Structures are given as structure tokens and as C-alpha cells.
Length: 120
Image 1: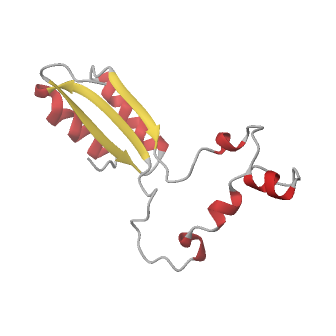
Image 2: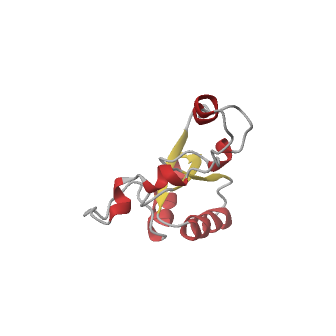
């Protein structure tokens, strides 16, 4: 996407989908039309595992024993151990609201998303 002359974008990260949706609704009521919410994650989409392509396990073992779910990868994450000490773990604010607007409406939009818990 390329911004037009005079347009600016805001990337606002939210901890929950509900907060992102609430901010998007307020922005819509205020006349902002170019908004989008996406989920940002360090883990692959599980739908990628639902294909019938051969995996390394099936090629080496000659079996279809691999269940195709990312659960073992998720379980191997260091944060699963409970030893993680930071509240700013990856994924803490994994809902991204992207907004495109004119320069003169930036301050109002930033205020709205911050009121709903976003980091901008």
C-alpha cells in the first residue's frame, strides 16, 4: 500500500481484540474509513499445517503419523515454562489496528486509540 500525498498511517497495538474493535468502532463513528485489524503472532497460522504435502516426518518415517498440529511447537516456547519474568512478552499486544488518515486528523485518532489501551 502506498500512501497518497498528505496521508499518514497509524499503527496501534492492542492487548485484546475487543479493545481494537471498540477503537475501530469509535474511529468509524468519527468518520475514519480506512481502518483494518490484524492479528500479529510469532507462530505460524495453524491452517498452514492442514495441507496434504509430504512432511519430513512422513518422508523419513514412511508414515502418516504426524498429526499436522502446531501444538509441539507451541509447547516448546520458553514462556510456557512459567519462568518468564517479563510482562512484555511477545504477543502481549498482538492486535494491530492500522489507520490511514489525513495529517490534520492524526492527533484525534491517536487520542482515540490510546484511550482504548493501544500502544502507538
